[in-house]
Length: 409
Figure 1 (cartoon, one colour):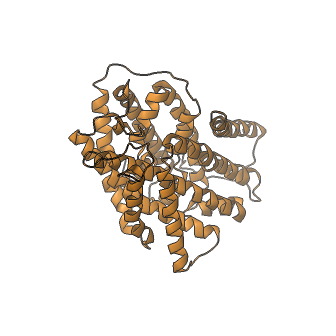
Figure 2 (cartoon, helix red, strand yellow; figure 1 turned 90 degrees about the horizontal axis):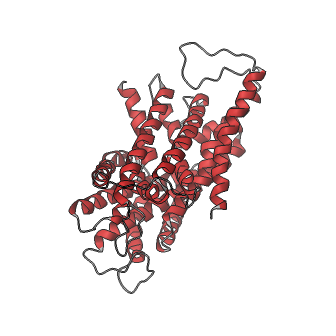
Figure 3 (cartoon, one colour; figure 1 turned 90 degrees about the vertical axis):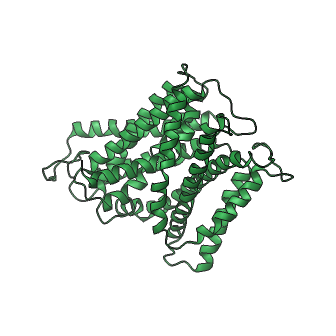
């Protein structure tokens, strides 16, 4: 495997993983490790398949998923996609702000007399005051016009994620018991995994830049790698968290909330993860800004428009942070709604449109590259039947997760 394959594999995997290693152990422990394995395998398989569909219909010149959607489904679907992704990136920003504030709040609380994280107050240093300070510090980065230098920083900062995985494995190896099956809420885990395996928007720019001759193989390996990491942190995290409760005054959103905050390694890890997530936020805001103005077909927005958008974006982040929104609900609903649309509905719609409703003759549909050129051909009845079954299974997975998430409110 050469460098042209390794870069997209690790970039795609790293993009999907993000801060998942410190959040997933809590969910695996809460809802059962085996439940996590089963749901993650199903969602991983379905998401990888639809990601391969995106790859199959992608053209080299298309640097973003919206252009593929525009070519196949039309401009109205592209506009709808831009609107959905605006919501998606705003939700991602909320998730990252909540996690980063939760991480650094526990560190600051060691040195400052602070209110419990779940208490809304301004009479002493609190989670709300931290949010105001944090957003004010981040605000100048929201006005950056060229984020190219920032794009390399999260890759180096991902060392914190590796250290978190090592910490989880070490702590998990000290505990002999684990929670296997639980059925508190069967909708949470699959909803979370739909977000955790959502690599479709990321894979398109990677494909446009990749020189690898085995792009499908690279995507599959990236998903296998991501799935494996999730199972490692889920298994050892479940062991590490067995019968543990969050430390006094902490939310319990991340696995680090369950260990003594005075431990030096925990403090270092929290600071490093805080820096890593903080470096991602300007990038998320930048992409959300691009999507917002693309939605209104504003190719060259005026400076005051950019300033207003940045302030509104910062205010939304601050508002939800101050409300101490439940992280589990935010992730699961984002995964259920956005994950179903981007990860399931759009790829299947592209497949059906180009294969059965395109004016041109249809080419043979293979998810794995072949050394032979694809030749136009007729579609047989048996192939149509299996196509219906395959698309039906994938859509039923995504839609079932969406429906269940709203049933188990």
